[in-house]
Length: 401
Image 1 (cartoon, rainbow, N blue to C red):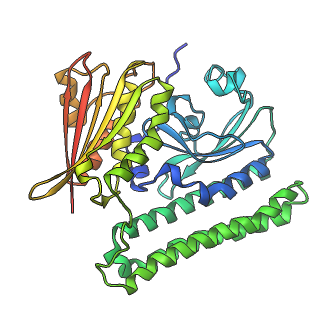
Image 2 (image 1 turned 120 degrees about the vertical axis):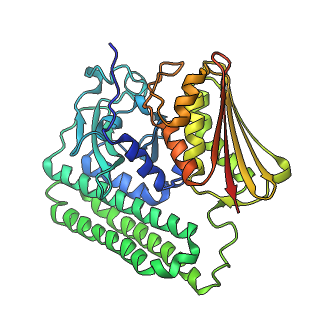
Image 3 (image 1 turned 180 degrees about the vertical axis):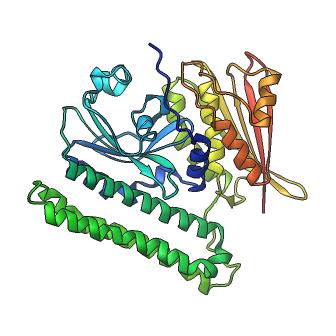
C-alpha cells in the first residue's frame, strides 16, 4: 500500500520560516537537553526528542534515551505532528500501517508508543515537534499533556532567542537600535520557566513526578546561560562599530567543509553513496558569513542524495573566486538520474513538481524552491547542468565582502 506523506498547506512558507532561524542543527543540544529530559520525566517515557523538520530531513537537535541525530523526513512520525494543531498520538506503532514497517519499529529499539506536540511559532508556523516515545504502551493524562505543551512553548521561545542572537551576529552595527527589543525577547520568554516550575511544584506530588522537581534548577541555569550570552553580544556596542569579534558568525572553507561532512555524511552512508567535500586550498582561510549557507547547501546535498542510486557518488566543491568582487562558489555534483531540459527550466522558474528518489524516497517539492529563494535573497546566482541518466550539477555563486 502506497502512503502519501502529509504536507502542510503552507509548506513553502514553513520551510522559509525555518530557514530564517539559520540554525546549525548539530549545535543546539546544550541549550535544550534539560527540557528534553524533563519531557520524558513528565510523560513517564524512556525517550524524548526535539525534532525540527526541513524539506528533506528530520533533525533531532536534542535527544534523551535514544541516540539519534537525523532521519529521512518520510520515515518520521513527527511529519504527521506538524500538520496538527494540538497533538498527535499513536498508541501502537506496530499496528499502524503508516509506521509498522519503519526501522525503529521493526528493529531496535522496537518502539511502540508515540506522542508529539507541534513546535509552533507565534505566526502559526509549525517548525517541528517535541515527542515522547516508549517501547510499551502509555497513557498520558490531560494534566501531563498540558505540561508537555508548556515545555514545547519554551522550546520555541529558546529558538526565538537563538534567532534574535543570530540576527544580532549578522547585524552588529545595528545592536544599539535593537537593544530594547532583544532584552524583551530574551527576558520575556524566560519568565515562562517560572510558570512551569510552579505547575511542577503544585502538582508534583499528586502526579508522582519527584524527579521533575530536581530538574527545575537545571532548567533555570540553562535560562541564565542564554541571558548571559545575550548580554555578551549586547556588550559589543561598547566597542567600535567595525570592531566585531574575529570569526563572529563566520566560516572559512575548511570549517564549512567540516560542518557539511558532519551534518550530511550520515545521509550518504545510509544510502551507500560515496560522499566527498573538497575545499580549494588556495583560498581556504578567507572568512565569509555563515548566513543561510547550511540551508542552501544542505538542500542541494539532500536532493542530490535523493536522486543518486546505491553506490553512486555526490561531490561538493567549495572555492572562493576573487575578481573585482569575491564570490563563494558551491558546486554540488551527483551521478544520479539527471533531468531533461524542460525540468531544469521548471526548476529555474521555481515551478518544478516533486518526484520520488531513486531509493523510493518521497519528495515534498520545496527543497529546490527554497534554495532558489535564499540564493536570490543573498543576491547570488544558481546554474544547473544536467542530462538524463548522467547526473546533475548545481553551482551557487554568492557575493562575499
